[in-house]
Image (tube, rainbow, N blue to C red; front, side):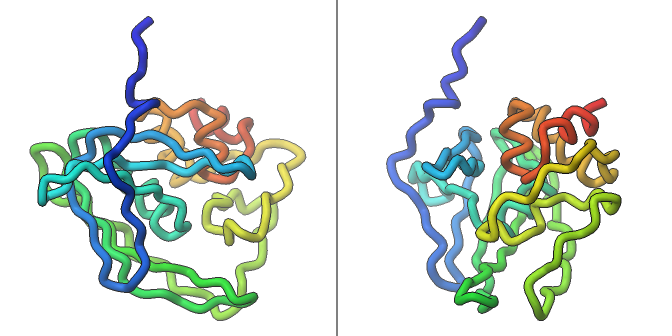
Length: 190
């Protein structure tokens, strides 16, 4: 069994999206995860930036994470991540919006999916039968209750699960990342 050095990749610096217009672009050298004390796990991209620096970008912002899951970039792909604007939400929270562009190694740009219109009020949980990925819920509202029985995953969710599994993430990491039950991950992979 070979050792996975990507799990221990360390970048020389970290990038934080603070203001609209903040942008980072570069080639992905590793994709790891960042675990937090509360048990939350976020993906972390290690980039060789266009200006020659080694930078780590922790993708914990829900909008950024959702768009990256949709694009499913791989090591060797070029990404451009831009904080476009911020939206004030209920409870003093702020939702940061992002533009995500991925150019596969040796390929054409993959445009991001069209963003869903922002709701005026905090989203209400969908009924269990809707099989909507919980990753679209407010990540600060707490963990959603696990369904009594795993629902059949929606096609989009199944595709996200397959892409993440193909990138080497474990079922538990995928479940944590998408905020779904591990049983739903297994059902989506079947």
